[in-house]
Length: 275
Image 1 (cartoon, rainbow, N blue to C red):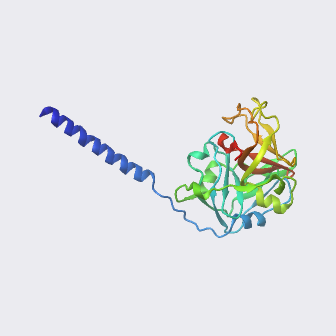
Image 2: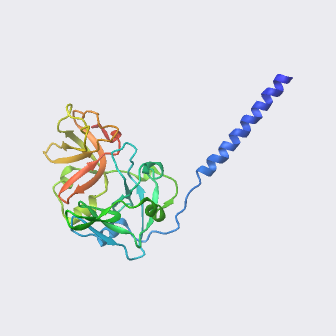
């Protein structure tokens, strides 16, 4: 009887613990609801505040609210203090002085951003939300890291992450790699894309990045068109050797100095053997 009572007590304790855990999980998964309602698309916002200069900064003066789903992750270390969102019309890069953004802003998380009195500009040709900084060498203003406190004061989460909202746009290198018109820059900057059937220069010999510095690697298609992959030496796949043969690649497109397209991998899983 004593043994029976002991086991009965143990079962009741486990049931109570499970109930407490379930309650905790329910609280932990409380669905966030944004306070603001989007009133402008990312495409329209980018076009409204676009300047052709390589670097600039501007203040958002209207009550503009945009939204988008997170398409990036810094979990591998290759994306550094940047967040990318997409709303179905265009994508936007956000420069934030914060590490480990993936812990809170997961792929498929919808963000709502009321932008009045915040800043938009360019950093080396890449249009982004950021913070004013004076570039002494170029004698111009540019958009650099948004302070973490300012970012957290702006951003509103809406709903729970839904990865199904994030689908890369299938493109060919010829769609953009030699085109730096305003229309093409607005369309593709920050966009998550998929490029099929390309090969690495230096495959089987070079690693994704050198040990002591971020490195450029090149992919090419059958027509000879090329694209630069920009890989951080802090990425957890830095020492992986470039794969041989044709591959399909997913990545985030950016441009440097408005005359060089670059692709940023989120993780090594963004590179797979071609289908």
